Length: 140
Length: 155
Image 1 (cartoon, rainbow over the protein chains, first blue to last red):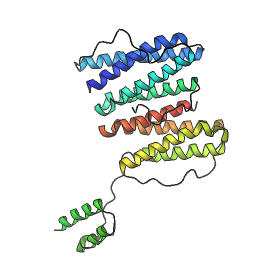
Image 2 (image 1 turned 120 degrees about the horizontal axis):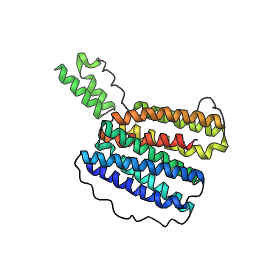
Image 3 (image 1 turned 30 degrees about the vertical axis):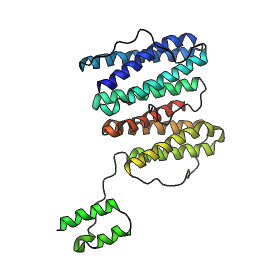
Image 4 (image 1 turned 45 degrees about the horizontal axis):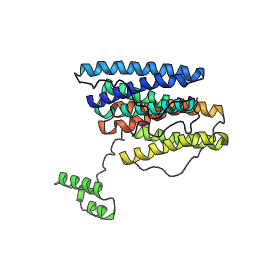
């Protein structure tokens, strides 16, 4: 279980980093509000995971000092594309936690997966990407 | 002896649904006609039923408002995909045929209705994921997430 949780932690760290970069290129008020609240949620998830992993006495790899972005963020379009990619990645990481947890931990993982899918749909809508949803959020 | 006969009958039923199996069944003598209690429905049956109901609701709404069809049809397909995988998983047979039934409202009313249906179906899938054995949790979790994302996309 701790391996999957550590992967979720890495995905949340990457999301926080990505929002810091992509936020600069967003232009509309709606975009910015969404980016700020998304980043805050990823920070909360990250903090909760750190506590869970500490309780499990699992060692987590230290977060890398910098992340490599999958492509260059030059404008609103590339920023939105990264936001979609980040949320899809977070959904994937949390989906993998579902089979190895139960009860409260599974509920947390499911809520994180669901939230990420909802935010990805929102970013697709803001970026006029069609379709706005995936049949299987989080499936690799 | 009776027990043996029952066990064999179950095995035969499980293995072959064809006429060879039925022929073997009739050899079970006096107790061969015992009605088998129907197995309880699979815990995912309600999730499957909702996937089909939702798919048909989207298809009907798309027929009623052709300008919405392009937006709605990918979501109908998502639900069809969920139904197909769930049916395979639990060994259910999918009914054939597409949207039928009374026409629905058009335009924004239709979207609001669909959204409400997604939110209610999300609750079912969420509960089913929490209760699922580990081998099913990811599949049902993705279905719950898709329903939540649909509700968002309908805003």
